[in-house]
Length: 111
Length: 120
Image 1 (cartoon, each protein chain N blue to C red):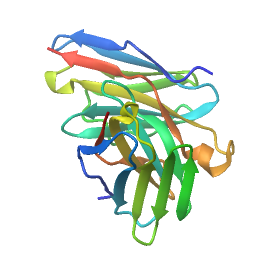
Image 2: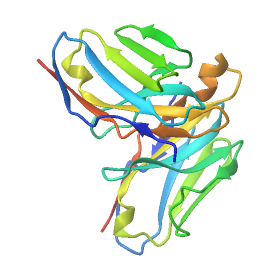
Image 3: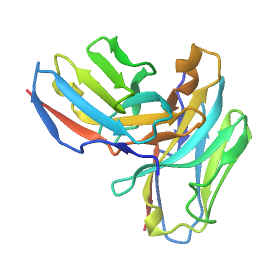
Image 4: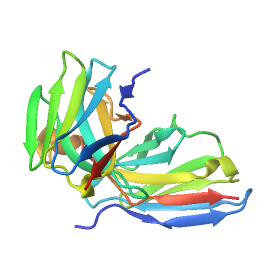
């Protein structure tokens, strides 16, 4: 059973801090990884994708991938209350069209 | 560009009734996915279409569920008869054609706003 694991949270951080969201996956063949943000009552919104080991930065967001440890993370710098949402991690296998989603981590940014 | 469009946004029906959910993928995307999201089970893939052809329907919970994609711009998910346990948010997502944007573009799925289904 291919799985993606996330801590459900909530992860509470003060405004302006760095929020660190983590995800592990069981399928060593996974090649593509995605972070989606989902506000309450809304649909998942793709915010980052990463394919290679290392860091990928986009504005205040940095995705980190370590395939050897089967670990993906998302860092949000200068966290804002508007970042409060559930963050879903997803993994796609090399030969699979399917995205396997984690259950999500709820982030709360305190003003 | 318009995103994925779904209708209706909310549906309330009584047990035993037929429900039809609709989806229009992003133009140029050749893959379409139907998901269901509940608090208990999270986001589950129901069915996947590629070039309008159903490739994997192993996530469809029962024969009461059926999905079609008659053309590249339209798909339906039908539940007949509906049951209270079908209450959930149903999302449609589409994925761009291979080759656009390289590997990254090929993998990314974009979600519609969802249909919140309540079966009484």
